[in-house]
Length: 136
Image (cartoon, rainbow, N blue to C red; front, side, top):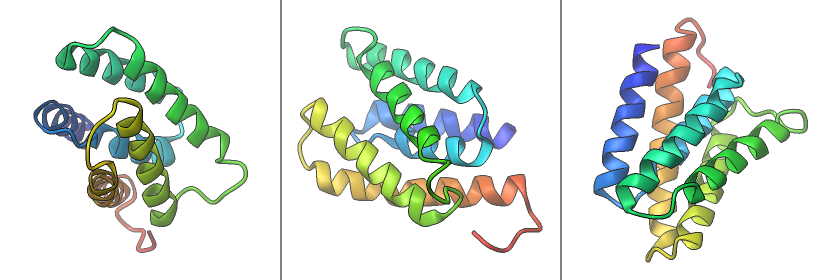
């Protein structure tokens, strides 16, 4: 659990400094691995905090992030979600939509970088939650 808190702090701090939405990759990894309802509250809290940092009206980012988590949870029944490919595609599309909605430049490049960090988050959380598993 300490690793989740540290990764959350990393994602929030660096998302406030850069325009790369690291929190989307972290939310994708946490949602896929833990499958708990507290992830919705985490997404909502992330969104409110990031709206405060970016000086936007409150709730825009929260709406996007909770919809993102909802879509991941919706596709859990149709696809195998505990794979790096799913986290890669999911974080790429989520960050591309987020960056497009808020009209950031270089959205494709930032989404690609975010997807790579999402894979790192996913592998770290996977190894921490199940250290004896070798398949990712």
